[in-house]
Length: 239
Image (spheres, one colour):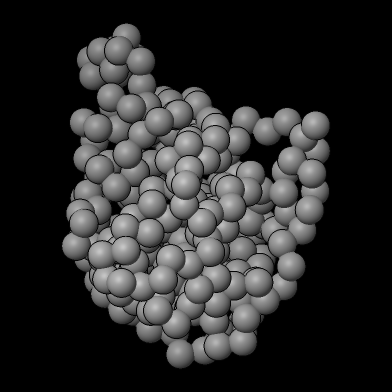
């Protein structure tokens, strides 16, 4: 029996292709995995993992390069996405954990993830789902989950212009409202570069750097097909 019944936004979305929506091509994912230095890290946390798409790509990346497949823990808040990940990663050395990154706890049985369990921690396009008031807790948990000399690799939004950040936030708020994702409406926070780096340093991270930069371009037509019913698309198009 679950500790609590939670309906997460991505329970409602179901099956979708995050990379296709965000315009993340294969070369960008390869650059992210290059930065992970997986040959030196065989215990990996894929945090806020969605349907397990990054872990799936990670296993393929390692196989193509002759790197021993790491043991991956897939941590996801949405129960629906966790089950999709379980199906996607069947036969791979992956533990699927329906759990909360803010408590590092299983939502199924309350089991805690022990400190220093991983050499690598990865987040792909997800840390903006956490409200500003809890961002420090997110990075503290990631830091504590890593073994000494562990590495955290984050692929996500970093803004240097507040107006640009706020404009994207309003667009996301409208989309989330129309889709009925009220938890996302309330919680999303896109970080300024200073906010991100300051929180990382505060919890103990050192040698913080930008490995790669890329231009983000959301594929709105794919969002419409995946998130909205046909009648909603038609009505909101008129609006």
